[in-house]
Amino acid sequence: MPKRVDHAERRDAVAAVAEQVIADRGLGAGLRDVALAGGWSTSVVTHYFTDKRDLLEFTLRRTIEGAAARIETQVGAGRTRLAAILEENLPLDSRRRRQWRLFIAFWGRAVHDPTLAAHQRRRHAAFRSALAEALAEAWGADVRHDAEREARRLFALLDGLAVQAAFEPGEWSADLQVDLVNRHLAGLGLSPILEVPRPAPPALGSHS
Image: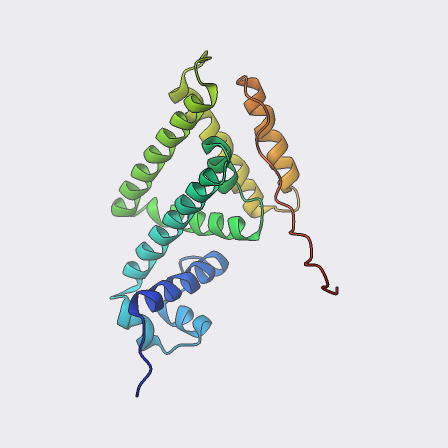
């Protein structure tokens, strides 16, 4: 019997490869590049995506939804919403740097693409709103700031750090990014809440 293919799973796998390819090569990469990177024929990619734009838009949406799911997982595990949002949206490790390289590649296309530009504006508005709500939650009853205005300031800080760290990771270590954001939060009357990701300790009995 021929092997059954989970089409939703395969579509997601193609988009996962596309995310890596776009992060590494930019939006100049085509369907054939994605197919080669995934070890498929080009017909496999075109079976799930009608054209390059379809693949690009699905990949961006998948990346954003994945980040949102990780934030909810962190909140469910006890992290504050503000900490979870900030840590997911800083390029603190290779996964998050790749995520930011993908976003930057799409920004370049969105400047001249009205549809993508509208998508970016909606995404940014939603992110500012989420930041404002998380700041208000962190302040609780002791609100002495304009949450919307401070969300805009914090958004600008995150974008600035992320863009510089994406281009010069050696100059913008995770420790430096976390320190700068924690200092900004302290100026808002909030305790330092960000943490630098550390490698998990080796399992007992493992050998280096």
